Image 1 (cartoon, each protein chain N blue to C red):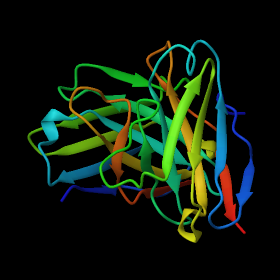
Image 2: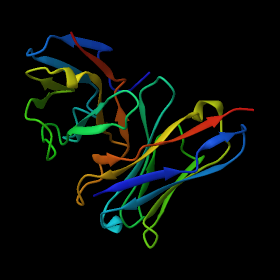
Image 3: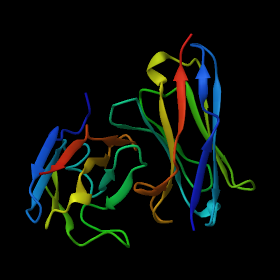
Image 4: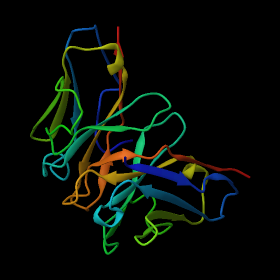
Length: 121
Length: 110
């Protein structure tokens, strides 16, 4: 069965960097687009970024453009999110999610269990 | 403030039907058939319930249906059950090749 396991979260000081990982299994990772979505404590969902199956196309929410970088290593079945210049408003649970179908990345399921990033001094 | 507008809360009794709206613009909801809906129970990861405006993924109950008219998409849940109590989020593709989420709607089953 499809499994997505995020890691790399924790408590980080403002201005520092962090790299989140999402280990995928149970499907042909290289065939599917992948997303990062975040949820601040007690708040709604916020889409962060998408990467195409071959890694050649990447799109970001305006709120993170220039500070976040999505990438993937298809040889390792792993998705990444590099977060630079962390801010308090980046505090959230970060979820990775798999595109539902090969032909379109714009709807996704399942999601991982999430990893919590807390930005605090 | 979310780009897509949803009611903060809706409620219904078991067996009844409810509808959740999701209003955007011609640059997102109205411009593309790339609207989807997610269900999230407290402390859990979201789950895809509807994609491409009205399609249901395998395993999702046919009590869930959805549609779109102009710049507004709608999710209808019929035959409400206690297990349907959750938060529901709409999303839409945009002209900027990005996704937007609605602010979410808390469904209470009375």
